[in-house]
Image 1: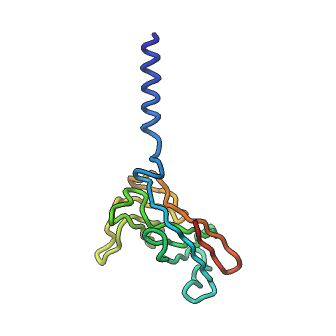
Image 2: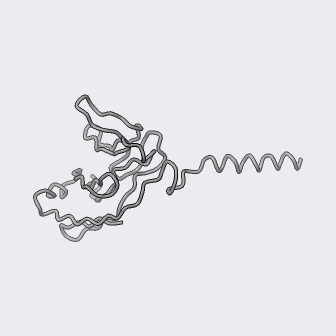
Image 3: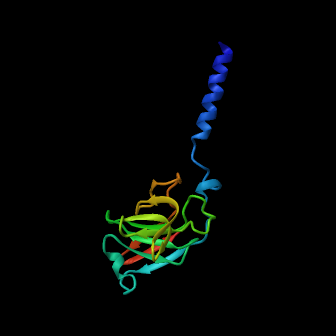
Length: 152
């Protein structure tokens, strides 16, 4: 009886370890940290559309860029454009797909969207489908009047 209990405990611990998500510092969830500090004045013509729900703007910041999204829930999100699944792959970049209103891993092309890992994410950075098990990396975003501040 003791041997059976011992085997059951070892098996339970092994299964428990295999179901845990990856450590965010290694493995499939790893996205390198870089300093981010953006100030966005939404009264400027190039950023004016961010005042409207559902609008977004891409910025050259972070690892592979950042999307600042004014989501339909009237919340602003600053989302890293590096896919959390095998982020070291050259194709692991996130693009916004206006047709399905989701963020997708891959590259837009003249012939259509070329998938990388087939992961999809919500505008709020949440994982929806694909091989990844992690949400996209987000940055702090605060608002003062018509100015947004993005940082980490």
